[in-house]
Length: 510
Image (cartoon, rainbow, N blue to C red):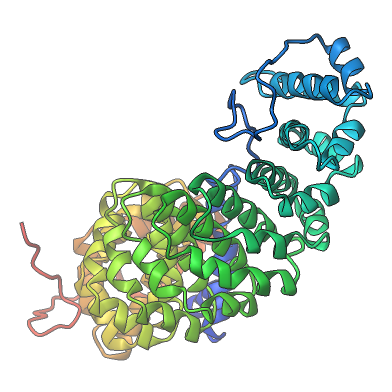
């Protein structure tokens, strides 16, 4: 028989027992990468303007609009006549605003970007600036290569200068274009930041600008907060945070959504970065927004708070003090499984903290919702719920473990021992092993063994001794050998009265 590692040693390594809670939380974040991949958040990285007309075009815009071929556009854009330049640029913008298959590549290959950039520098012709900015916005909404062509064409600095344009429509289109460029990735984001775009953007935020303009500014600010390889520079974050705090008080769901996404990017990192956001005092408002019926607001606010509770114990306590645990248990029962999963992930990070946090989790009635999720949730959600139990088990006091068992958590855990996910099966076996060890310390192991047997857990653990995964087979064997009695005819459990047993089965309500 191979030498088996002691179950408490395995548990310590797997659950980071003995390390501080913030380390265990950071390790939990690594396990939840699937929450972050597949799609780059629900928020769009880039946006193409496909409207036929701007709501408030520059007053100098001629009434007559001419449809031109690509050759005519090329000739017109390169003409010295401002009117012909305008007509050709407008025609190019219209081609680039097609809903399907806009000819971005053709326009780039035709060499029009340098001329469009030149038109941005024509303050006497705001209508031409507007059309050129719109065309460049849509080119920058394409692939990274197409966005790079706009950057290489020298568009960023003139677009930043247009943020001071007296014409709001020109200014708004420049905001949009810069948002698309910054949304491509950290390289272009940092070029936009180094071009001094942030002070200009922030100066535009006011209660008097049109709501569509404010939405575009907020979205562009969120793209300037996006990406973490590398993160935005500390100076930029320090500039943006006070305005994000103010935008978080807005009534508009699009403004709130993009503000919350910006904060989620800024909290997706080390404790120092999380601390910058927490210190602004945004948590009470974020927790309030987690109650929103608008998914576009609920999802990023929940994501942000989930990031925050992956930080230090202090940061987690600030979230708890803001009312977090009054909302998260409700979200475990949300109709959307993706919300349930995010809520369970956040709760698992709370449970990774000290016993005081676990006690507050219990006090807010989280355990019944947790058990219901383990029983009836989709498997991807059940996996996150298992992590809550795992962290609860390794960080809780003996009395808290008793309450955990009394909540009925063992039954759904035992039922999940048959799933086709080796990691989850191992975690559950570790949980059972740890609870058995805890019960042994208060001389209640025999009663807990009886409960596990009544729930069908013993049969399942015995069957897992034949599992193809060596770790699962060894862990199951270790549990049987260390915690259950054996005789020639099979496994026999002691006959117990368990009348006052802390671990006895709890009567279920209908």
